[in-house]
Length: 328
Image 1 (cartoon, helix red, strand yellow):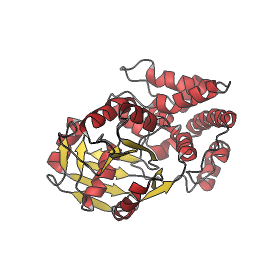
Image 2 (tube, helix red, strand yellow; image 1 turned 90 degrees about the horizontal axis):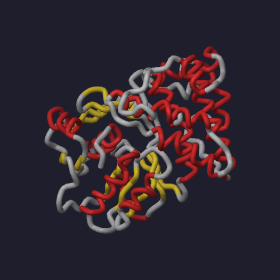
Image 3 (cartoon, one colour; image 1 turned 120 degrees about the vertical axis):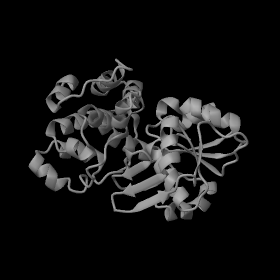
Image 4 (tube, one colour; image 1 turned 120 degrees about the horizontal axis):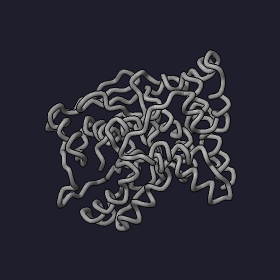
């Protein structure tokens, strides 16, 4: 549900492994899949193909659908509407994995579709749409979801499909750990650069570090310890990001294992004229800080930079201009 980059990649990998899949999404993507099929590539050099016509396509949840599992992959702002559509169309008890950024989407979906079983989940990697029907995973990682006995029979299928899934008793620490890393998404989007190129510019890394430090302060006030979801523990990452370029290239070699095609989904949203998910990332930090007597002015400024003029696209910012905007 939500055949964007994540939906097409994960759903397409499952389809390539023989799982019957229906993609529900916008006409732009579905028309491309209908014409070209799916070509799914990754950082390790693998290629999976799904021929045109071998996957079901729909712009709305098909009448009478009884899926074994739903992957909810819409952007955060569309969560309530998409979940309500699922809840109205599907039988009670259907399992829904919220493969979305941010912290609150599973709760929002559960409220909108109380008859369904919505499980918070996490996608660790970046997917870029390279061409119509072509999606590329440019970073590494494994899907994660909260522990549920009904998911266990699916683990072998996800593994075979090349999108392995791990189950955890408590996903909150992982979600916050991922959100900390995702605070680079608005930096990347406003830079206009691929992820690796952006991370190799010291000024952009300073902005990323400043956003992370505000978030870590808010998490400390809330008594939440974020999980490590990157090569470096979250608390050490701001210091690492501020290293000079020559040293950062050496120390952060694992972090920079990103191919040249990778970019943030937020950058894709800007390119397509869509409203971004910045409120589900930086906005979540601002709300957590406020709830515990703190402030997060730089995260608030990032929300303003990306959201205040919408639907007019924000201006791209140089490293110095972004540092000035955030008061760094």
